[in-house]
Length: 71
Image 1 (cartoon, rainbow, N blue to C red):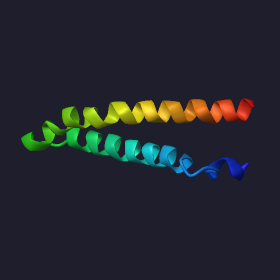
Image 2 (image 1 turned 45 degrees about the vertical axis):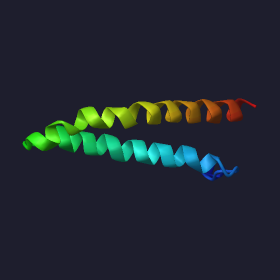
Image 3 (image 1 turned 90 degrees about the vertical axis):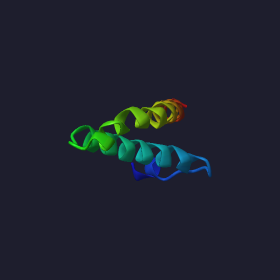
Image 4 (image 1 turned 135 degrees about the vertical axis):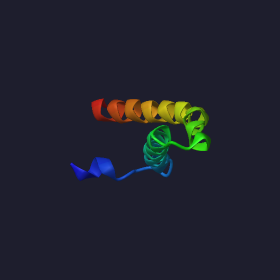
């Protein structure tokens, strides 16, 4: 069960890094959206530039894990 959490290839850790980075950026985006500061109000739109590629990396990582499980 826990063997799926341990990356078996050097590049597999990049998927984990992308997911953690995505979670951090989404959290920052939500905090900035709730802020009253006008400077922080523009931050969510800026973070969308990083969120889209990280979401694609996350989806690719999920597909790879599913394909490995089916094989």
